[in-house]
Length: 124
Image 1 (spheres, one colour):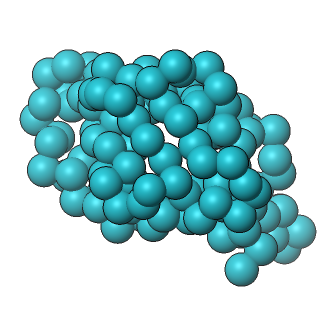
Image 2: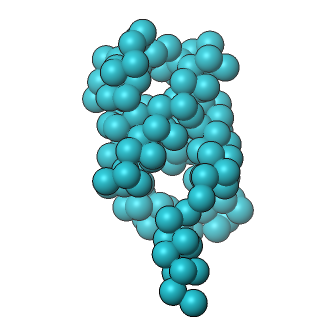
């Protein structure tokens, strides 16, 4: 449960950063609305993204992974369609927002300790 809350928190920070840096992405004011959008975004990434990545493997290979950014942007557009707490003006804004969200999420995951690694290292 703690890991899920950390993931929602990371998504919230990443979405907040994207909304602050990309003019075409707006979030409704309010902490709880931000957490709601982050939770919906996380669920979409957990359920839909693996399927889309699997179906897109040839494109991902041919584009050397650039197609993953398009898939991330699509996840952001789907989140926009499912909730009114986030507004994305166009696919270009979603694409730029996806890049920012990926960078912030990657950085946060690198800075936070991984509980799985701690558990396996304690057994040694």
